[in-house]
Length: 255
Image (cartoon, rainbow, N blue to C red; front, side, top):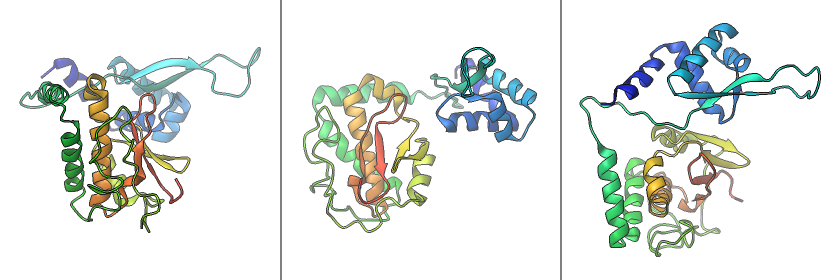
């Protein structure tokens, strides 16, 4: 176990500090001290103390930014702002190293050309994670949204599902069980412009080394989650954004 990782995670043991951290992370943007204090229900000085401790531990990064609309002379000094740091920390007792084996397996799949089988396995895993509460929809295995086609540079190509297929529920506006599933898997879902987006990539290290394989498997996994919930898997599509997951979900039936 890495001592630095343990020290960083231990910083979150304080309930106020953890609340401040979770609020900043959930915003996906820079957060000022006043905003963090109001969200955590504490004084600004206490929020500032915890924010700086989180920066010191490497969990947040800080900078300066004008938060008001005024610019030029008289607009005041830029305020100190915070956002999630790009690092990653893991604690396991006793020590485990699943990451190395995952990287080796991903390389083996790439070398053997097993992308299609890997996507099929990921889709089955998604259905299992969802509890198998639904059967494959119109985009299921072998269908228009299935994973039967060969993998390409865009993981969503040929796998968008049947746009006109039966999907009375789609991904509901309140997200419900899908939102809960994604949150428990570490995706950090949030709604924006009619889509359910994922602020965090749980497979970031693997995706950096094997982006085409891992992103196509991730899309297949997300579509498997939808199938397990009895939803149209075509509601999930490849939609990469900087510092976020490469998959998003449509919330209404028109997107």
